[in-house]
Image (cartoon, rainbow, N blue to C red; front, side, top):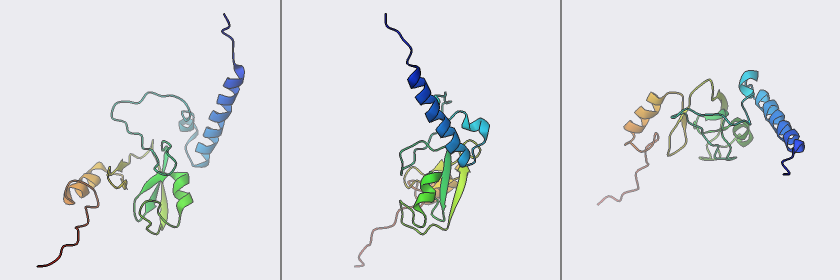
Length: 143
């Protein structure tokens, strides 16, 4: 036998979930949307989950650094002002983007974010098909 309870683990799980919900509300995630944090949910094929390059956690609320457009979890983004963690550019603003309300499309090379797939696609195409920012040409010597 021995299939017993373990109610203490349930209490700990509830405490963690309550803490995650409070954190979500702190960043303006509406109450109904905060309920899913910390729980397993089915994702439809094609739905993306971005992982913050600073804290390695899934992003529910983005912080987009402007003007460089790099995106992180909102708390990480606020924590790195005045300088971007990836490109060291001066941060003038952190734009809050709630993932469940506004789709965000990231360049797979440089991790800059765009609110429109068309805008990202046009920039990638215009810059040679690899990155939205293009590649800096290597210094060439003149003959």
